[in-house]
Image 1: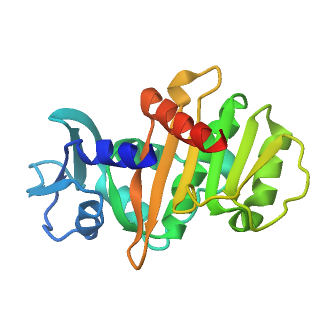
Image 2 (image 1 turned 135 degrees about the horizontal axis):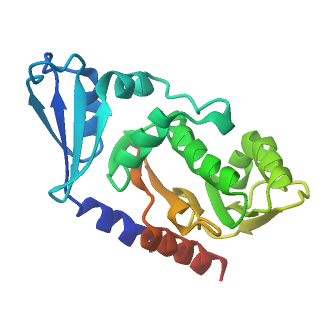
Amino acid sequence: MLDSLLADARSSDHQFVIHSADPEMAAADWFRNHNVDVIHRPLPSGIPRPFLVVERDGEFVGVLDLEEVERLLEPPIEPPSPREALSEGHQGFFDALSDTVFTSISRRELLAVSREIEDRAHRVGEGTLHVSFQRLSAFQSQRRVYERIAAETSLDIHVHGVDDWTPPRSQGITYHAHQDGRLEPYWVLAFDGGPEAMQASGLVAEERRDEGFTGFWTHDEETVDRIFSSVASVIA
C-alpha cells in the first residue's frame, strides 16, 4: 500500500515559479528533485526581494520569500530548534512542498521533515503518532526525543522497525518489532491530528540503493489515513 501512495503522489502536478533577477537560483535544482516544474520569471518592478509562487494542479497554493527558502535549504537542513518555536518560515516551506515527490533526499533532510511532523504532534498533544525509521536500532538516537514528547503529551506513540534491537520500556511508547522486511525500505511518520484533524500530517520515504530516499510528505487528512492503514496492515 505504501507503493500505491507513492504512485498517487507522482501523479500530482506541481509548478514553482521563481521571480528573481538571477535565473540560476540555488533553490531551482533542489526543487527539480521534488518532481516539480520550475519556471523563472523576472522580478516585477518595485518588488525588492525574489519570491516563489507555488501552484498545484493549476491552483495557487502560496508565495514564499525565496531568500528564506534558500536559507532553509542550505545543507545540511537542520531540525528546527527549539522545537516549540518552529518558525513560520519552516511551516510555510513544508506546507508548500506538501504532496510533492522528492528524489535523492538525504537522511538529514528526512530528519528535518520528521521534526516538523513531530512538532505538530507535540503542539496538539493528543492523538496517535506512528513512526518507522526502517530498523528498530535506528530509533536509538531518537529515543530520548520521543520519550520527552511522550512525557509532555497524551500522545499514543507507536514505533515500528525490523527486529534488530530490544528497546527499553517507555511509558507512552509502544514498540512493534517486525520479523519480515515489509517496512524496512521505508521511513514513515503519520500523525492523525488528534482532536484537530487539520493538523494531520505524514511522511513516506523509500530508500533506494545508491539513490537516497524518494517519497513525499503530506498534510492531507485522507492521505494520512491511508498511511495509517498501510502501517496497520503490517501490524496485522
